[in-house]
Amino acid sequence: MNLALHHIPDTAITALARGEAGAAVVGSLRAAELSKHHLLLLAVVRESEDSGHPNAGLAAAAYARLASLDRSAPASVERVIGHPATGHRLMRTYETLRRGGKRADLDPGLLAALALAAAVDAGLPCQAELHLPPDLLMLPSVGCVLLDGLPEGNTTIRVEPTAEGCLLWLPPEERPVQVSAIDSGRWRALSRLSLPGGPDLILDDLDPCRWPSGRPVLDRLTDAQRRRWKAELTEGWRILRTTHPTVAAEFGEAISAIVPIPPGSGGLASATNVQLFGAIAMSSHADPLDAACSLTHELQHAKLNALQEVVDLARPEPGVFYRAPWRTDERPAHALLQGVYAFFGVSAFWREQSQHGPADGRARARTEYERHSHDVDRAAADLLAGEGLTDQGRRFVETIRATLADWRNQI
Image: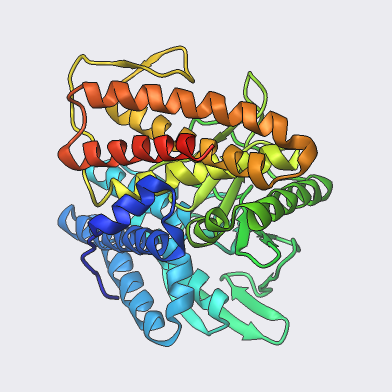
């Protein structure tokens, strides 16, 4: 598996700041995030060895197995390693090792689950030894096996491709687990949604690492709830694809998983997390326009999170906080920059809706555009008046303000 250096050229950063990046630029951000996951994987293997972890050998063998699969099925390995929950799981495992802690669900001896998941995805035979955790064995981006009291410890698991999918053989039981797109016996499948003319999404209500611990998430959805989620996301996607083609193209490159969460105290809720690039957590959105706007908002956060992994836009400014028009609390510069960029995308969304959306919704869209663009411009001006931006960050925010001014001049 190859590790690559990543450079985001100034022209791409400018395009991101103008809301005109497109699929190619966002694809380069996704590639950088994939490399980050590869580095985390290697870091877990090396930290396991350096710390003398008893399952360091299992971690090294899992890495070698993944490298072998990468030669025969690179797309499957990329899907598994690039899966949002995989990055979060690797980060948590690494941090646990660094602290000298021990957690059965974050044991480095579980890395072979990535190889098993890639083999299932590719439909290839695979055999790997791993540390069996309690309760469930997660195959990231695929699904999980309920272990039903199987003893915790090291065991060998085999993937056997069949005409109906794959079988997972878990000793000492003689009956295998059938892996399929639906729940069956001890198997629980991750739901998938193919957006018309767009990406395939995972509706993740299953992976323990799908969202940071302590944050509210919805547990396993019912079939009826799953159908409703898929319908809402599909309708929101249709709006993006029809009226916001650049956003839709970027979304297809960046987002691979939706994590259902409960509504917030104020109603609809959505979020992204820097450790989970590619995932959007959101509550149910009955209104397709609200769903499309939330997806746009969170895509902006995802892009900025990924960009700032490669380029420094903000710097520490101890004790200095800024007022955010969209919040009641004051924010440090790096957090206000996140809000500026997210609501810049929201402003662009409503601007397009006011010009090209259904006629009966254009008055509302115009009002929303005016409100959000005014707030973004004011917050951006405050950022530029402070010292919390790097030179590159200043150019980024200046471009946002210049784009807002261009929009006003086009009215």
